[in-house]
Length: 548
Image (cartoon, rainbow, N blue to C red; front, side):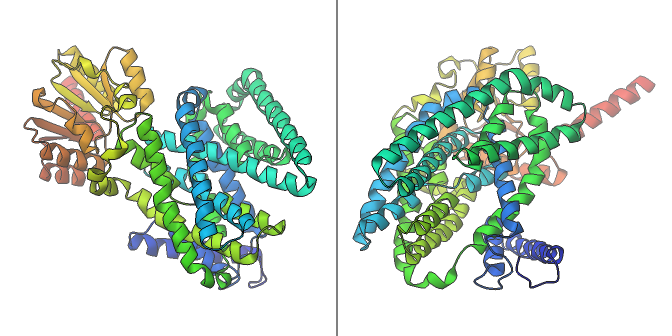
């Protein structure tokens, strides 16, 4: 860091205090923390106060945060999920990359850029930020939803493509001809193949028994997980890929072990803390002095990214048989450019392919699209409700990809619809079946849907907040609709949607506090379940019954 303060510790303390204060102001103003932390970065960066530069300790902490984020993502993507999401991720990821590159190139040419500069700008517009999207989806608990998994899948495809692009540009600059580039490409493929084979062998013969031993000490297990993520990130960077790819593969290598949930839950707080430095570092890297002349082209290119990228994703997913809601929510994940775009621009600047003004343009587009898309994703469900009437063109008459996930044709005689078939909901479903009720389960986790279908339950994939989905349910024949989901926005949306559909039966929802229970009752719930309070009351009844 710069010598503004007497020592590094004091500078870091001031930086954290500023982040806490500005973050609190952002929360008070109902603004996303990501935007607040980027603002902190701009304030302490070289353009304003000059406390942070791209080469200081903040950059190292930011890289550790990125590695842990991708590691945690890898933990959630076991090999089964990769196989099932592979085709849609590949089609959507490559389709969006091709569309944005081609259209973005012609827009850049129309703005008067030379061909080489236009290529860099077009490619920079192509890639979306896995880091930001995963953080937002995690905060909204949507990583395990269908649209969340699709989004993460095609973002990973994008990450692989951008790594190949950067490797190719570096190789071309070094080789100077096509033959040299070909040799570099073959070398990368060989290294990548050997890297994956080595990880596979470790998964098969080493990692699981090693984790069994380390799990005797939870602290040692977490320490190993962090070391493993950072080590494979370093290996990935050394082999010419990126630390993100290496850290992601480290997570995938542990995803099939029985300890992935324990590791992931313990790393969440550390990941969030370190990601603070990534967003500060991102803001600190913005050079405001060169941005003034680029405002108009930046706005035009930002509109293309914010509107055009989601449109192509919705078109592809609609053609593949997914609902318009799934396409819309997944499409919002590509409505910004990535930190990789800034890295790509910096690479082009160092190679002499683009100038400082072009780098400033890419940076300004990044700031606009990252800020705007953050709000779009945070408020994705209200946005969908407003835009839903105009999105029918992106959906087939029969969205077979999602309807195939539930036993829709076997719903005659259902008298209870249960939203949420996790730990609490599955217990409710089991008790209802034992007492002679016919239950239709609904969940937005594809793995849970598949599991309970295998156990003989009638199950649908669906979202309680989706009004179109509610309209497709057999509401006229059921006596009760139950929700085991404890998130207030979900239950309020469910009550509102059922009222709009004219449902005349009874509704029971779940809450985690008496204040929420009162609000749900006022919103039309006939009964509110409070698992912990209800279990405590039943336990006391049993204890006093035994005493008597």
